View 1: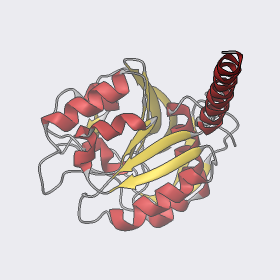
View 2: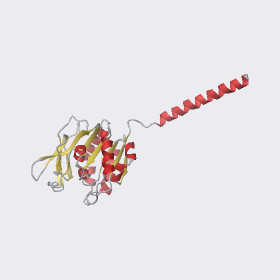
View 3: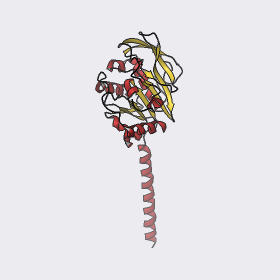
Length: 254
């Protein structure tokens, strides 16, 4: 009987040790809270926008912040997938020029994703990603209006930082870029403008980068990024990187 009792106690001790060891391993396998998963959603666009080249360049710009774990999905329909919830922020890098938008399930997926507290970044012609969805202007802040003049002729212009205290743009200086200066954004949704540029065509200032909240989610919208040169411009790349980090609830770093 004593032998049986000793064996039982030994078994319980061993089981307890194994359980403690398993919990320790599980704890060490947990993802670092400072690492945020980002998904760039791309795959279709206006023929003059070569997403096959700009999406990798954008991913590289974001990955220069080691806290951003960036994936690229070449299918806007991914917004309808339950896999979207695995990410902390999504980047819209597509525009349904010659095909329908991803559809009602993708719309619902995106809306719920951002409203629930996840981040969203919209780049360049992503402002036209959901042309036939009225709610998109409340998520994006401003959207492409085909009845407006599209943009200045492709060329050089200065991006002025209008809020030097916001976490995204704090400490940033004005910079020169060669890109498309968009003049085609419309909407009445309240936004907070971070950067502007002055049109050489009409002399007016237009928003280049701005932020807003949708539900409990953060949205950063930047219309720069026509081509690889524009994406890799140091000032633009910094805006993308810092804006993406902010949407994922990280403190942007220089």
